[in-house]
Amino acid sequence: MNGDVDPLLDRRGLLSWSARGLGATALTSLLLRDGVLAAEPTHFPPRVRRAIQICLIGGLSHVDSFDFKPALTRLHGRTLQMREQPDLFFGQIGLLRKNDWEFRKRGQSGLWMSDLFPHLAEQADELTIINSMATDSANHTPALYFENCGFGQSGFPSLGSWFSFGLGNEAEDLPTYVVLPDSRGQPNGGSSIWSNGFLPSEHQGVLFRSGSSPVRDLFPARPMTAATEADSRDLLRRINEMHAQRSGGDSVLAARMRSYELAARMQLSVPEVADLGRESAATQAMYGLDRPETAEFGRNCLLGRRLLERGVRFVQIFSGGPIAGSPRASWDAHENVRENHGLEARRVDLPVAALLKDLRRRGLLDDTLVMFTTEFGRTPFTQSAAGTVGQGRDHNKYGFSVWLAGGGLKSGTVYGATDEVGWKAAENEATWHDFHATVLRLFGIDHERLTYYHNGIRRRLTNVHGHAMENILA
Image (cartoon, rainbow, N blue to C red; front, top):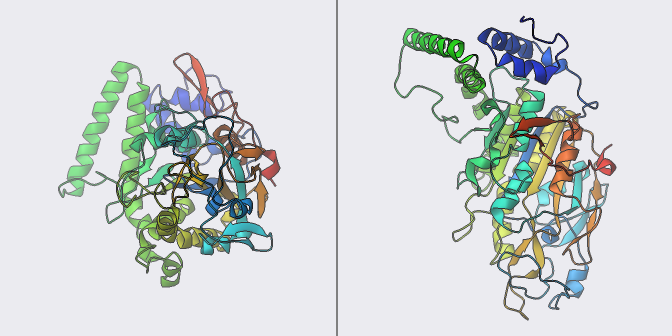
């Protein structure tokens, strides 16, 4: 070991030093594989080890799903009195509209949930619902950046990338951070939603597609013998070593070399983990793989569980893709909430409930975090000409709902509240900075201490804001 290396380096310091040379990189890889670096204490005792996030693209209506507002029935057809001009997307303020699905108390906890998610409602006692979320934008793209990266523009690392950087991976042959998209298209912002930003490139989310070849360009375009492939890898290794010696151990090159080494190992691991046929017929049916409307999302949820089991730190599943188009392939219910949300909910309700049940029965839910999020909510009044009651709802950044489930949480509870009609957060307002700080806390990380120096600024996921929501922690 070089004499200028501090023998008391912490985990991140050792990772930084490892970029200076191939020998150090190899040593770091061995330490990570054997769990030595992973043993570095976190800021707090961790409550979970892995996470899976379900992202609903377009904006889920909280007043039709998790935030019961009886006053909307009483005030249906009336005008909401507002003192200021609200920040909406289309700016059409119609009359108040009652919820399109009936609400009922669910489970032993008595959580109010609507009939929009009947299968998920059966898992109510597993949920921790946050009904007081608020964000800074009513526009899809910046709102998605806030939800995933903590900032309203591209160029910043996503939550999964921060996990990868701060905690490393538990799997030697799979990525730390995997993204499972909706086959109908990518969300606004595309791959920048799961970008590594200014963090080293190995921390970017790896996109897994549906079908027999989940990872693009993982295998050679033309068949080649094992000897030829081995020779080509050896040549590439020698060229990289020569370049690293000339450049003094370029960190970008070192990151790329680690990515290539991982890709080689993934040639064996990916086909195995993506083979859902290894699951029993009963498990496949539980996730809805035998039903046309749930098959695709069910496959992603089941694949997500298999990835988590094999040491992947963070899995992200998207529901909804293109915002534009007719019908919309997302939760963006401008024209008709019942039609839009009804269609989208049928795709995800059964698989998400199955994921919770499956994690629980396999003993994984106690140290796994499940997140169910959307970039903003929808207005309690309709998007229509003034003085009329329409069928759609506009974007609502002032108040909406998300939920969490898994280890370290007070399950079967609700945190925060919106006002009488679900227009604005009125009790314990929670921002994305607060949400991210809470998620990091569950992993044992102090959000103010997980930082990366970039362009003269010590950057962090929560910018200069945020606090953990201690009241939802068990």
